[in-house]
Structure formats: structure tokens, C-alpha cells
Image 1: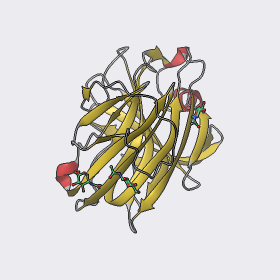
Image 2: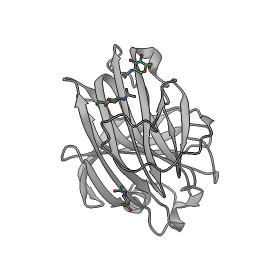
Image 3: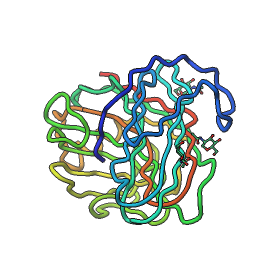
Image 4: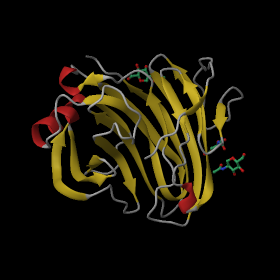
Length: 252
Ligand SMILES: *[C@@H]1O[C@H](CO)[C@@H](O)[C@H](O)[C@H]1NC(C)=O
Ligand SMILES: *[C@@H]1O[C@H](CO)[C@@H](O)[C@H](O)[C@H]1NC(C)=O
Ligand SMILES: *[C@@H]1O[C@H](CO)[C@@H](O)[C@H](O)[C@H]1NC(C)=O
């Protein structure tokens, strides 16, 4: 889940919400493997870090960015390397970070999304990727990272998170999850995988996850929240994923 930020600075006019499947003349499309684009409170990045494990392409479109909300979509077709993630097209919040977990009062988030098209046998997740560490700031997947907290709202085609499943059907934030745990490079990965299928309308307080991990999984309350990303990790398949509306805030 390497992230590279070579962000084209762009001032985006707020778009009037329209029919998302239609190409909006003012929508901005990213086609380069590591292209990024300012998206209001967020930055949208293609992040095709694993593309060399297969063949294919992916393009991401910023549909609108208004206040703390963002709407975008990504189309991809990837083949080969069925066990390798090809990319993590994602939005990262530009300022919801730099707070110690113990000092977070709430972290409300809402995410409505759907596949407009998805090929048979697709292998992909739709997920949060949240990074914490000892320093108050640090890019995702770097030496500054201690924990990578994933929340999988979808995981199709039998794919699995890093590590092994350590708990099943735990209740956190009003949903049922299987919890996976394992190391990756210099950090630990903790992945909550929806135990009840896809969640396409998600509305929770992320602080419930942080409190759970502090109480039950040895995550230090002194850890700093370094980044909140949301997006999709395709392994193989062809899809058009539509993020109707995403927002997250961190209230210290
Ligand atoms: C993505 O696919 C949708 C159909 O699902 C299409 O309307 C849209 O134009 C495509 N976007 C790009 C950038 O190819
Ligand atoms: C992405 O855009 C490139 C360049 O326009 C195009 O060749 C490719 O087919 C697109 N990929 C998808 C999955 O839409
Ligand atoms: C997007 O979600 C936020 C937070 O729930 C909400 O305030 C906003 O009105 C939503 N925007 C749209 C266009 O639905």
C-alpha cells in the first residue's frame, strides 16, 4: 500500500451533482499510474503501486468535491497475478490527521458507493486504509508507520487481508466483523472485514474502531493518526466503482 504523492495542484470548481455515469465535461480524469489531484478536503490518487504484477489499466475521475465531501469513480481492467494487488486508487484527507488516538472525541464518516459494472470473478476490496504511528505525522506505508488499520466494506472473489484471521463476528460500530492481523514491512496490519457481506451505505464513528483496538489489540492510545484513506484494491477483474459520497472528519 505504497503511496506516492506527486500531486498536480488543481483548484476544482464545485460541480453541480449530476448523473454520475455520464461523462461530465468538467470532471477531471486521472490516467497516469501515479497521478494525483486536489479534491477539496481530499487528494485523489491513482497509486498503481502493484501494476507490474499484471497487465491492465485504470483511470479515476473526480466527480465533485464540496466542503468535506467528495465523489469520484474509478474504472479498471486488470489481469494476471490473481493474488497481487494492482493499485489503491484512493482519496486521502488532507487535514484529518496529526491527533493522538486518545485525544479523538469522534471521527464521523459516511460512505455510499456501488459498482456500476463488475465482471464475473472480480477480486477486489473496497476499503479504508488508516495509518497510525509514533511521530505526529508520516506518509502511509513508511518508516513512520506503526499500524495500518483497514476496514473492508467489500472483499470479492475470496481475497484475504494481510496475516491471518484472529477473531470472527466481533461487533464494532454497529456492524459485525472478522478481524485479521499480521505484519507488513515495519508495521502491523489490522483488518476489519465485514462479516455480513458488502456494506454500500456506511455511516459510523471511526473512533469506535480506535477504542476497540486500544482496549483489545494493544494499539497504544499515544499513537498518532497519520492518514485516513479510502479506495479500492483490485487484484483482477474489470469494474467501474462509483463513490457517490464520502466524508470523514476527526474531532479532537
Ligand atoms: C467509467 O465507466 C463508466 C461506465 O461505468 C463510464 O460512464 C465512464 O465514462 C468511464 N470513465 C472513464 C474515465 O473511462
Ligand atoms: C484508461 O485510459 C486509457 C487512456 O485514455 C485507455 O487507453 C484505457 O482503456 C482506459 N482504461 C479503462 C479501464 O477505462
Ligand atoms: C455527503 O455526506 C455528507 C456527510 O454525511 C453530507 O453532509 C452531505 O450532504 C452529503 N452530500 C451529498 C451530495 O449527498
